[in-house]
Amino acid sequence: MTNEEQPTTNNILSATGLSKSFGGLRAVNEAKIYVKKGTITGLIGPNGAGKTTLFNLLSNFIRPDKGEVIFDGEPIHHLQPYQIALQGCVRTFQVARALSRLTVLENMLLATQKQTGENFIQLWFQRGQVRQEERENKERAMEILESVGLAAKAQDYAGALSGGQRKLLEMARALMTRPKLILLDEPAAGVNPTLIGQICEHIMNWNKQGISFLIIEHNMDVIMSLCNHVWVLAEGTNLADGTPEEIQTNPEVLEAYLGE
Ligand SMILES: Nc1ncnc2c1ncn2[C@@H]1O[C@H](COP(=O)(O)OP(=O)(O)O)[C@@H](O)[C@H]1O
Ligand SMILES: [Mg+2]
Picture (cartoon, rainbow, N blue to C red):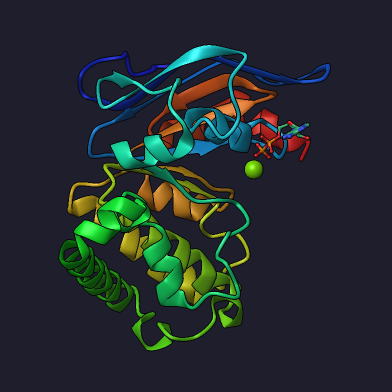
């Protein structure tokens, strides 16, 4: 029993029929998910349900065996992950991927890929423009770091940050490319309660500024307080979807979690 959202132009993301096997294991099996524009949508399910794999399929870090992904009205399943990010769909990782031997600021600047400076000829002829772009990126990076309370750490190595701060840095870095949708894989995992509260507030603020979110999270308080709509995955397939209240009282969902 689901009251799934139908694929409409109101969706920033619509994925249907997604499947991926690893050897004999069907990690994701004919799964679908819709994220309405402007919402914070949750994706939950027991450990090993296929949630991270589904993220990998949505962002094409892993190529699906089959399925279709529409982002902001355009098919994206044939694009490279960096191209998908440039279209406005960025993701973070369950284990934060900050480069520990770069500074916090350098990590932020790495996110701005489509720089003129990457092409040598352009670099030669357009030095003024490159410098201007670098200045703007740096300003934007510092503004975002300021907003998440990491500005004072800009020159520190990312490796010196706490686990929670590294999660914040990942989210801050995702914002550099002015995304329309951010996919967060367990933003609260391994983070202390105070910082979890701050992370939730940042997510709500960014959402008010127009960014949609799809969030995998085990912390049900986070899911319940943030999400407009929740999808449940179990053993690679859709189990249910609905409002947080509907999901919380769904007997099938409760049963799926009992074996954990
Ligand atoms: N690269 C991989 N190779 C082989 N098996 C994998 C790979 N990634 C995930 N799996 C398996 O697929 C299943 C789903 O994993 P995952 O998507 O990480 O689940 P979740 O994020 O919901 O905990 C698990 O059984 C996991 O062991
Ligand atoms: Mg996972």
